[in-house]
Length: 384
Image (cartoon, one colour):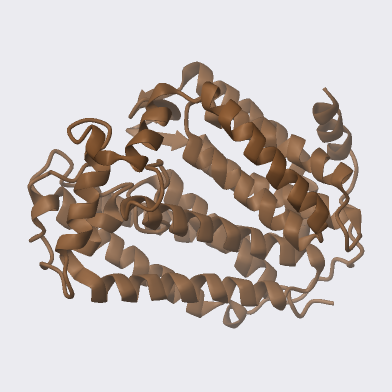
């Protein structure tokens, strides 16, 4: 109840920010066009790979739907850029309450797919995954909370309060169940805590508690989640069942060689051995058809993208702008590391999409909105 009390109380108060709101003409030249170009290149590669992976299947139109999703994402990004991020932060408590309510609604009336109840039907074949958009709310929440502390050292008491706020949507998403998405919320929380100056003694204490709690948390995992962890440790234990996805993914990645087999010529992808090759395992399909060289170029694009966002954090006009940019960078980096690690067999299989490549409207729109936040901060870096 204290969490709800905080949200309701803060929603009625103005955003307490030391910087004056100045009106100034914002030139499109100030947009980070390098970031936008890199993202569009990755999206283009994603559309090509989706076309290859769905050719001759019951989803042959997925590639042009992805183009529509990307166009919609660009529009949403442009809309978000036009609103001063300080004004957006005023509505964080309302957005937080709305997000929690939407997650509860998803649990009540959502449609089930791949063993999880994650999507709310909107009509005309459109399904929204609320948990994706909640990622943005978590970034905004962490940025506002840490900025209001106005301190260079984050005390454990304040850390626990923020963690309590983040854990509410995290637990709701885990109940869907969607462990992968819920972990992205915690990644943003951890990144914000380190930036806020969480003392190392507290970090050590949290690490020890985590190690102790991990064996206990095993009892609260769903059977399919336990199966994924077991199959990660020993996929050959059940090669036709729980270990199938990981084994086929590793075969696809390894068979790509130096230059790959070519578009629409990957055997694991085209013969449908590789499951959901245009969604969570799109990186495996890409590696098979474009090889080590293609993978190196793609990962280099992601690296430059994350570094450009970090650079925007360094040039942010205020502390809250820095937290917003670094929150987006942490979200992207976590997605990339977990997805690539998953398909390579370095991490357990989780339902985390590869940013701007995996098929899905909610994911694409969320990441473009996140880029809108970054450009929002960049556009106002000379406002004083």
